[in-house]
Length: 155
Image (cartoon, rainbow, N blue to C red; front, top):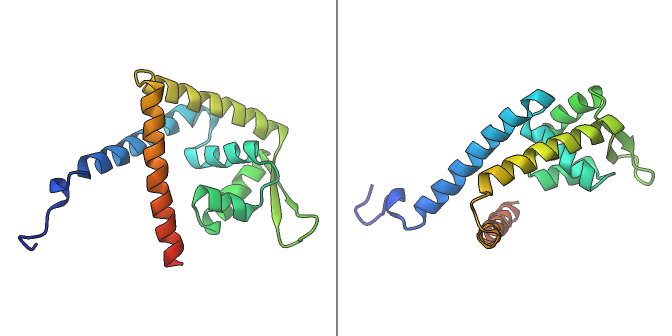
């Protein structure tokens, strides 16, 4: 490495970057353990929560919201449909589009899983003032905006 190039850990924002990445990874691991009794994983929860909020969303819109490819969706959705958690229906106007809906069982599981997720968030962040949580969210949303713009520019 060139003497004039700084190493990542010499960068003043590196500690923040690593802390965010580690917190995200540890939170996902903790959430996965917490959801195990419901026989779902965080990617299933992401789908359930989005269908709970945006009933009738298309598979493509869901993939875009979750920042995943359609191939990931095509693996998870049939599993969830087979378990009786979701329904896929043709769009009335465009038969090429599939719309996604929660079944009553899927809605019930979503509510149980969201309670677990909210409990975990409350436990982990209970010592943080709401103002600090909101400031952190604002920072993360700015980072997300930059990274999404970079992805769009690559396409």
